[in-house]
Length: 449
Image (tube, rainbow, N blue to C red; front, side, top):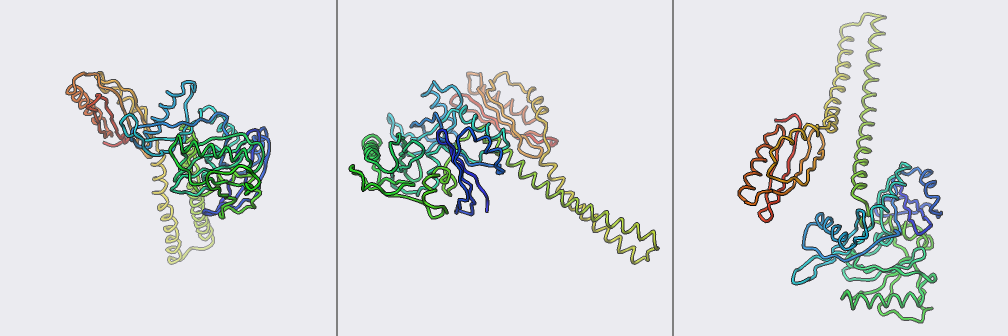
């Protein structure tokens, strides 16, 4: 059973939920509401290190982007470039959450269609730094509307989800666990009012006429069925999801703390982290894990050392009183041998950990790379990263300067021969026949031939 703390920032207020999580079940143990200017005090007093955070971002954008079929990793880079082109007013880097919603024929080409949420990194960095300054980490970061996805059913047919948070009522179109469209409107009162039903009917018409999608039903989350009091009639069936069975909390608390409780759900959604924070979180998690291993190993070594000291002290006191018989001496030597063997058994583990944390010389590799004859190529990108132990990973891309493809191939072959001639380097190179760009991947193992 693990303790989890989930908070949602909704306008000027913060809602916090503490819960115990066992498998797919969540039991809410405590809730709290406070103004956002008290968040720093809350983080300082809360002993938990990792938080699940949902945010009603001040400036969150959405768009539909079409790309040729590519891998998800490449699609992420292309989406950012396309969004920057379409939104020149956003000067900083962007973080995205995106869903591939299908394919569409655009100007005679079959392109993948993506629905994208995106936020300027500056807004995310400000929030992350607030947590890090108090020794806390963000385990997950969701836009408020995506946090609700973690408790919603996955259905093949599209449906509209409706939920209320703060001063907004939110609608989003979902199909097979993917978001296809979202919109929010200011609330004019709690419950389901005529205004809300009219807004729902307008959204249904938009889905039918513009998106060419027929929603099957509207799913209300965390709200009671009060539509009988409304004069307006919905154009599609309404269903009310009050509380999933795997969440142990009364219905009133579930409705009041819908966002932070939903973020603890067992479903899946994407975190809106910057690339820099993702790298930091992964590195800090590895350090934390290996710190635990070192602590266990230290306890074992202390225990072995204490046992050894005890044996030698007993031997010394015994020799001071009486001369030991040969049989007693042999027994003591055997015990010493076992203690020594225990120490020797720990030695490979220490050597393994030392090898894992040995830092290969990046500067030495750069010095050798500087001697390569690359006058006939324009190196546009050089990445060197640690792979653990004494290994570095090398990745180089760029453009060949020769107009002749044969000359470009010969120059690349010469550089590859020089590169693999460096002690400890193995590498492969590829040349694009279309635009004479090159791509080199290699591994450097320090101290090897």
